[in-house]
Length: 383
Image 1: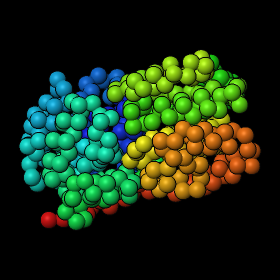
Image 2 (image 1 turned 120 degrees about the vertical axis):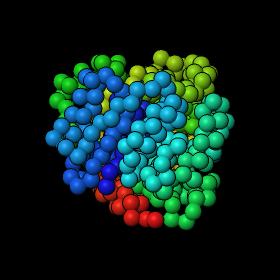
Image 3 (image 1 turned 180 degrees about the horizontal axis):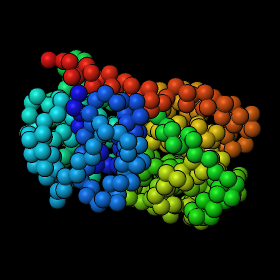
Image 4 (image 1 turned 60 degrees about the vertical axis):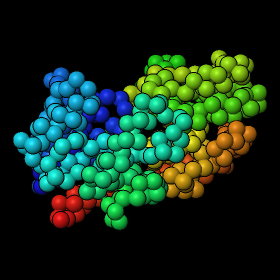
């Protein structure tokens, strides 16, 4: 098969979106020597392209090629640059996410990954400009695609619930912790250097991810305020940086609880090189989201032996099983109680750490990549 993959997010610090495509491509390069892959990006800087090629393990893979298509913006990419290239250089399959390219020859079968449909469930939490395009283009993408892939059973079922694709069109693959992350080791000196780099305290609760409204961080700040006096030496670290669609209620909540202001610490974007050390330093990892498609940071925390308190939403139950403490998503008092338990009960901490390590064994990018290869075969052979 001749397969094209949209890798524009690789190298762009796009968190979950980048992680999925990076690990899929890296594992395809590792295990698939039969099919031919063209990887499409809008990056033209040769130094960056060389780094991407090396990081993906493509240096000695003759069946993998990076294609750079320069455009003004992402719209001209989908409307003109990529379709024009594919008309002249047709493929069997093209893998992308969310928005499919326009005017691509029908014989090219498109597979689209949709990480979540939060824009349908919580439209008030999405920027109006983003919401407009998602509402207009996602239905077209699902109609045009030969297969639509969620990143969990829950996400697949949400796609079916909201968009009603033809029977058999929706499927799912699981995310996982990258091999690079699992194999990363640090000396004590390196850990302390990373602590100093991000100005991290000795004891802290950690959130890591984007800070969009659906991430529910104000509830975490309120919960932290409720336990602060009982645990005065514990800080709250919000890692990831204030980027796209930042939740302004985070600042309002900190202002409301002024006595925690100096102990709520923000970091910039955390590099992949430093992330495992950061998670491993934390005394508790909290993932309070109102809505997720999967939740890779939970598995990363499990692999770092950091006990987790996470919101009781369907994808978290699917991923974590009984290896985390779950709280009621809108209940700050309930969250505060769960965090306090994790920080003060050693037997509970040990039990969660043990179960978390066991739970990570159910997920691997190699398993996911092999399933994606089966999906490629099914789509290729379908009429």
